[in-house]
Image 1 (cartoon, rainbow, N blue to C red):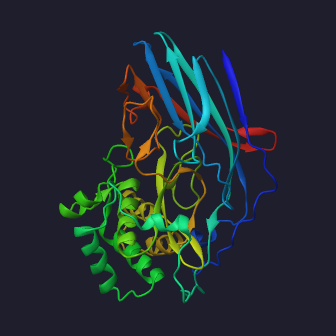
Image 2 (cartoon, helix red, strand yellow):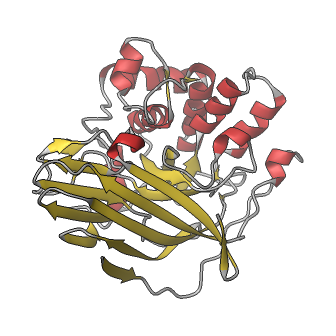
Length: 368
């Protein structure tokens, strides 16, 4: 068996930012600022034995440290002919890749240690600055992409939403879009994976349902079409939720991938949102839009993320490099493998096959 280590040395963790709760409820009190938790996220992959050449790519926790997540390192163990920790081509986002030459057993185990703290910000006193100039690295999140076009029905819908809400500044517009999505988009548990994010089709067909990728691609598209920089964040849930039983998972998290979203306010920075989680609770708990719990959750998740989740990357149109035959993936949130150039079904862990597990690290041990 071969083993490689990739260790990232860190200084002291950054402090979280507190959010003053508006409603004295379980939801409002449940996200505790600056309480860091350590996890081990592990992939166990056992690819089919047929074919002469097999290749594997795994998304890893984002190593761009923040006040809500930082990664301490990763290691691998397995029988790959070659393997490495690197970054997605053209980006700083980490991935693990491996290849096998010849038929036979193909196994690899990759573990990452990551710390998270609930992310929450206070927007009560925000006022848009006189100058709305954006940092250079933020402006690109106003641009259309193949996955998220901004013209036609997307632009029209965005204008209709913000006009009806009489929203004038970016914060008001973002909130109007957020509220509209929760009121009009349905969470569909039958959708494979986390959806495709085809927002033009959703709007043209007036079929406003899906899962987190669909819902947050729609939020991002409508925000960008309104002149607000916005982006998706792709990752995976790694622990139970204190907000709602449907919003987390622990242990076997092989199908716990989840997409979130952010929008940018000039003079403030990135603001986290998760309308998909509100839609999910409404659907699975069969609660109406005006239910008190939904009102509280809606307010809570405009400006916060419960960090029982780890971010991988924020990429659309992902190129895995010259050795992949897949072309550009719409996003990179699942394990990806190719055998003799044929893609395995990333949404079927049992036939792929892979298992993803999470463990909460407590003291010198782990809660499995």
